[in-house]
Length: 90
Image 1 (cartoon, helix red, strand yellow):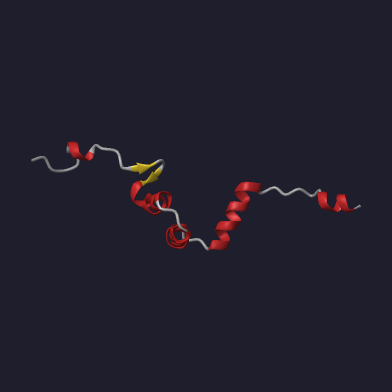
Image 2 (cartoon, one colour):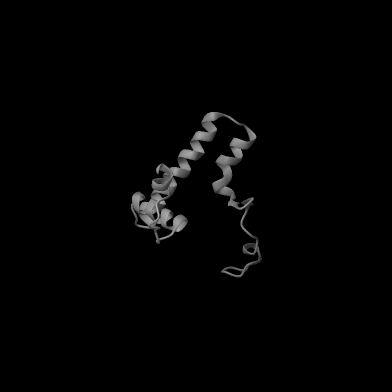
């Protein structure tokens, strides 16, 4: 029997539900098959909890720093000196 890294049984791609790993998609698949409000809130809470754990433990960032980084990503670092709202008030 072959052992190690190059066995034929290890060549299959991982199971996926569209683009999400199948084990992570089980709560969402349950929601699609048997819809209920608590089945929506439970996976949402799990995703938020795991997201916060990932931010705090893996990325070693605070949640405020993540929001700041997302704002810089969406808007950019350069800020305009021209204020449109002040001109609209005039």
